[in-house]
Length: 220
Image 1 (cartoon, rainbow, N blue to C red):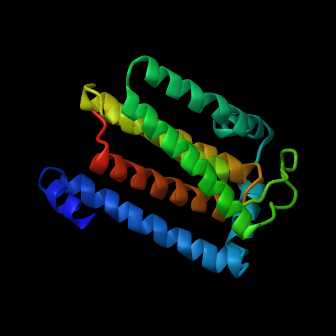
Image 2: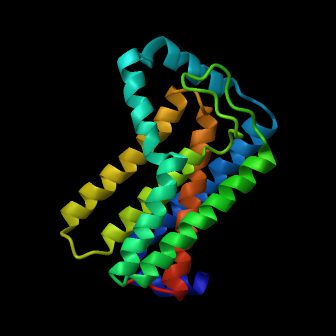
C-alpha cells in the first residue's frame, strides 16, 4: 500500500492526503463509538441529542418530510437501485464500474450484517415510525447511503464533466446522504452514535474499495 501511495503521491498529493486523513479519522471515531458508547453503554450523548430534537426540532410537517427522505436509503430501494445500476453499467460496457458497484454493495451488506449481529444493540425506545426489529448499530441506512451515493459521486468525478458540475453533484450527493442519516435520528429509529458509526463505516469501506480498484483494477 505504501509503495502505491508513494507512486501516486506526486500528482495527487492533496487529494490523497485528505482522503487518508478522513479514513484514519473515520476508523478512530468508529472505534471510539463502539468502545465507549456501544460496548460500555455510555449513552448520555445519544439521549441528550434525542432530548434536543424533541424540544426544538421535531414538528409534524418536518416528520412527514423525514419519513420520505429516509426511504432514499431503505432496504426496498437498495434492492432495486444496485441491480438497476449494475445492469445499466453492463449495458454501456462499463464492466469495471459494474464490478466496483457489485463489490461495494455486496461487501457493504455483509459488513453491516456482521457488525449488527456482533454488537446486537437494541433499537432506541419510542420511535416516531413503526418499530424496526433489526439491531441498531451501525445504521444500515447511514452506511449504505454513503456507499451508494459515494459510489455515484466517485463515478461522476471520473467523467469529463466540467469541475464545477462535478463539485455540485458531489455536494448534493453528500448532503443527501447526511440528510438521510439525520432523518434516522429525527425519527428515533437509530441512536445518533449508530448514524455516525454508519457514516464512518461506509466511508472507510468505500475508501478501501476505491484504493483496491485503483491499485489492481483501475476504472477509466
